[in-house]
Amino acid sequence: MIYMTSEVRVNRACAMREALNASGLFQYKYIKKGDTFPSMPVHTSEVVMLHYFKPDPTCYRRCYSSLVISWEEVMRQYELHELVPDPQAQIVDNIKNQRFAKDNPNACSWTYEGGNFCDLGFEHWLGEDRVIVDNCKPSYWDSRWCFGGVRVGSVESLGT
Image (cartoon, rainbow, N blue to C red; front, side):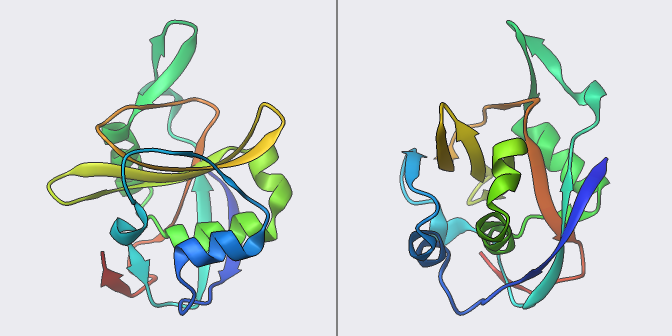
């Protein structure tokens, strides 16, 4: 279910890593396995409507005391909502709306090179703002997270 939409103006000339570094708002608290930035989807539209959604509750399964959703299911939810990830817009939106990540951990996920999974996430954890940049084997998201994307066909893509 889409529960928030934000109009985002994106300076596409600004590289994603530089946008995060220049903001001074987020420090990399957790980066895993290599450099995910080059694999991020890149779009050309400078103004987008970024939609945040929570996956359908029936998509989660119990893992110990948490409810989790697989990356494969998150990607299926993107398709069901007719959204594609726009990491650059999500970076800008989280910089602009600092409180959002504190109340709503949010991420975007995508696949690249042979189906490998990558993600970019923003959260407030253990008293610190945190950016997660991950490039690893499939894993799971817990039910705290929402996911961001733009409508399929609403942005021009430069590819990955």
